[in-house]
Length: 535
Image (tube, rainbow, N blue to C red):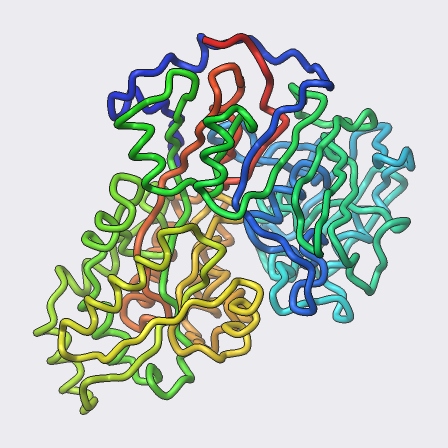
């Protein structure tokens, strides 16, 4: 993958100074905290008891908190590239079959409370994620489910024995799921309820909470941290806003210094058309995708022909342009266009939208029309455009005369549990990758114990193609198997890809390091941010 970081002037003519001209590497003044805005909402509930426990957390917003505070053996580097040692001094496969992975920890590692971090803590942390007593259906344990055994030797050596070959394992060790935590603060068989989080990462975190909802997280440089990153500020605040308008106003008024998740298409368009002399807008290559998921056991969509007819009708180009404008592109596969192994499988099978072809599909399968469906979406997780997106999908399907569709919006705290429990026949989801490899856009939705809780099973994918692709250390060589998976998905339609988004950051022009503030998996790297001189 070739990742480019672009300031919008170079892309769409926004007349603003290049970031490089606006200051140095940051003052590191702890009394002048950099304030970052987000619309991510976190509330403690029965359904979501532990949003920041690595054994539970599995969404981009939670991982943005964890990446600053909980260290991993490996980490994604700036821009492109394979994972590099972080808490580890070195790591690598020690066999030819990609089944034995060994790491040596850095000397003198400590948790933020001063306690030594050893190989035993690594073993404890990974095994904790896999513990059946703590395992949650919405968790990310699938990332480490292939670990059969973990051995330690002394305080610095740890060896992972995998059940099957997996060339992507270094990427998985770079995710917060593999974050290293202390027995003093995390139970082996119980989640750490609430918002508290601690580890050995670049920052420590202190939360401000009101009515069981997170208002602000203050990150302070961790003096015990040893790793590859170099924090540019002593203190960074992540402030939670109710909506994009409130976040945008705070940036314009100077109350915050930067905003990213989740800027609205209208905000991007406005900053393009009427640039603020004190605010720079940065566009980056994005790997966010949106898709419709199906409960393939639900009576309304159990027949493949119904799902194929929807795939034949949906106009991705119109959907992306009408809702998201230049901030999104139509997507014809679960794998984004910039990832090695991408194939336009849905376009190859269905071509341009055609209600006439969809009617033929339904008639051949003896499906009575109109097919009645409810499309569910979450109202508070993927940004303000989601409601309009589903209204357009509803109109496209209903205008065909083949479907009678209603739409229903549900808060994320209710939505996630309901879709996982199979209560929705069709529902909208988004995906920010755990790591930038095609495997991570396929296996989470198709493999056993998948993220969606989907009942869809395809033996060729699960037993042959995914294992074959994971044996290949050369990811280009894995593309043959990966493309076959995409073709099967286009035929069976257990999911229906819709669009691929771009990433944007808006920042006041004295903030440096903005071009590195999001990594190739779309996660925040707050340690890159510093304060320089206004351009």
